[in-house]
Structures are given as structure tokens and as C-alpha cells.
Image (cartoon, rainbow, N blue to C red; front, side):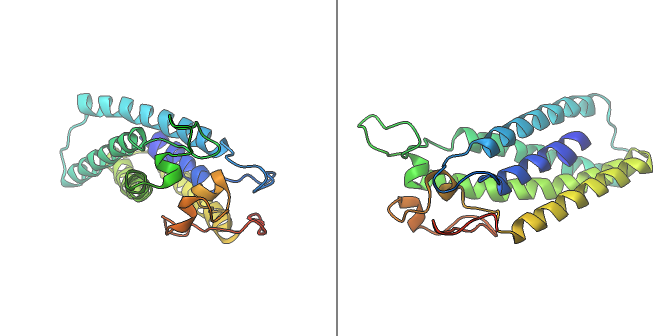
Length: 216
């Protein structure tokens, strides 16, 4: 669980948030860079698989003998439930569409993401805010779980240092303006694209104009 929720999944979230446009990418001439998409999926899938394996071990061997162990268990189940919600929302997110996607049956650019349909908007709220909530609950479960298991103190120190490193990196990337709207990263800033006409979804997410350089 520490490897999954403490290391891999948070790293996948950071990549998805700050690397939709990579440092050497010439945006908006180069669009729909799938670097973030590939690594986000890889890290989340591997992390979730490891977490499920750990859950099987927990079910077989764990005993909630104390009140704090019971709290850890509740937080753990809440985290796994949110993980299932994240996977389900990703599967149900709808079609992509748009100039960089597959054309719809009638030959248009129609798609849930390109048109920012209600289905896509619901997905983005659930996926983004649900993911943050899952990380916060998981972090609490990890810290409590290490104490419940009487784990070596170096484990707690290392995971806290890793979280601090991710926090510092996230702060630096946020201040440099790297948290770019997914829609613009894929299709650019042209106001003719329907998704550029609605409110951006997410805390700290920004839109830029074609003349702006998102790396400065």
C-alpha cells in the first residue's frame, strides 16, 4: 500500500497535472502530446494492481485489534472505494472527438471531450477532485498504518521525504505555470473550439493564449 499509494500513484497524478505540455514541446504548433497520458495510466494501473494485491493480504491476515487499527481500516477501504470510482469514471468518460481524434460517424469532430458534454464535465469533476481526495485519505491511512504495524521509523521518514519532494516539485511547477488545461493542451487555444468557451475545471488550472509560452 505504501508503494502504491505513497509513491507510484502520487507521481502519476503529478505527471498528469504538470506535463500535458512537455518542456521541449513547441506548443501550440505541436498538440496532443500523450507523454502525460501514457505515464499517468501506467503508474495508476500498476499502483492500483499493487494496492489490490495488498488488499488481498490484508483481508487474509489483518486483525483490527485496536481503535486506531479500526480507523486505519476505514481509511483504507475509503481509499480503495475511491480508486474504484476513479477507474470507473475513466472507463465511462465518453468519446474524445476533435481534430486530433477519430472522426464521428457523420464525419464531424463531435465527441464528449471535444464538445465538453455534460458527461465529460461530470467525469472531470469526479476524476480530478476524487483523485485528490483519495490521495489525502491514503496519506492518512499510510501514516496510521505504519504506526499500527510498528514499522521501522526509517520507512516513515523516507515516505515523508518523498512527499516533501513531490510537494516542492508541484509547487515549483505550479508557480511556473505548468498546470495547463487539458483541453488546450490537446486542441490549442483557438476560441472556435467549444471547450475553450466554458469555465476551466480544476483548482489552479490555467488557460493560455497562443502567444504565451507555458514554460516561463
